[in-house]
Length: 356
Image 1: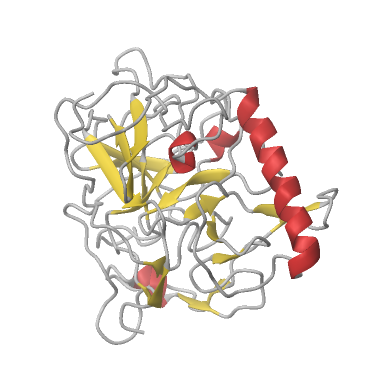
Image 2 (image 1 turned 120 degrees about the vertical axis):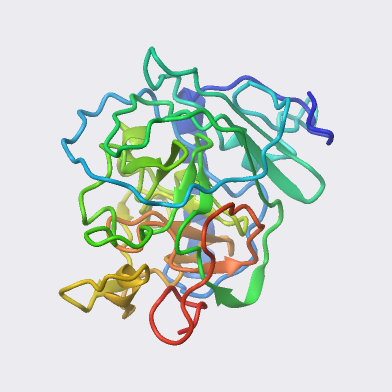
């Protein structure tokens, strides 16, 4: 490896049955803890503990594509470019014969085994831990069939996303970027927020119908990214509780929207965003999607679209409705944005922590 940092053992990994078993075990463990600490509906937050992340078997992407089309004017964003990175998939530091990983967050990253198409490079992915950070390296090629829905052709990238290995809550929430990446999905592709760069007709790309069947598209520079939950990676896993979909750049995990509803996890329920659309029409500026929505509460999730789990750790949830991923950062994010705006507008509108 030429990372210039100690990465432990890098393993070639694709998602398999072991991921589903690990997820099931975590769900039962969290549910058991919940029997003592009072359930999952606390909107407060705490530090995420290494090893609390769940994973699942996502298999190949065979979902039929939508016919949505449109243009994308996102600013291409990304992590620090690293030359000579490994072209392996998956990773993690092992602790030896015990089988327990010293870098459990890295174990949450893996490819489906599918490819974007015969005319594209194979997707590559590696993840490892330094003393203080988790590093996820990717060539930016989807691990599912790519269908171009914007004028921007898919281009190979050289990403090295970084986020804290041991996240902690900040003194106050801060805004997610208005454009550019705010996190990384489990296949190494960037996660963007619920807004587009300013252009009439594109404010919320999900509602505007300019995303592909996996709720992503390409920005200028050929940067593929997600704006909403990538359900094509979750085929056969609907309803799997505490399933890790990726990580925000403040280090907290992003989970699929299902949690255990009882101590034995016999019953599973979906969590929902507390944000609601309060304006029928969108303005023309880049903050339009945020201006049209307001956090009203009344659900499990706080304004950052997350909650404290039964074991005391904090996680975001990828919900069906706005803001789809994070509404704000609970922790302190690392600087992974290139060409993407950060923070909300001064005075009114914008994501929480950015001027509200």
